[in-house]
Image (cartoon, rainbow, N blue to C red; front, side, top):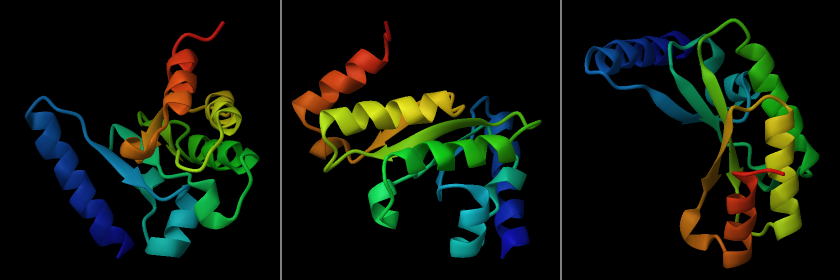
Length: 136
């Protein structure tokens, strides 16, 4: 399965680049965990950017785990031309937790952050997201 998934992604990479596009994927939290859970070793793929779904609440983890998982992915991608944008599951987070999740992501090497379950994001959470785009 690992080799089949890699072959499909590598072929998709060729097709997207031949058409002037980039290839991205939402993936499981970090390569080792993804390998054990769903047999995907995404640090070996030819891909432009990954958006690992680092949903701490899905794994009964605290906010600091977002930083840990981000750093694991960033370390596994060293030497590759692949960006990592941490995926944060926003529902249920307080504005303070969301702010900390963004901080954990960026301070541990993420190029950016993606937010999952947009329709459930509150106005207070949107304010935190907007403020994170222009840090003081």
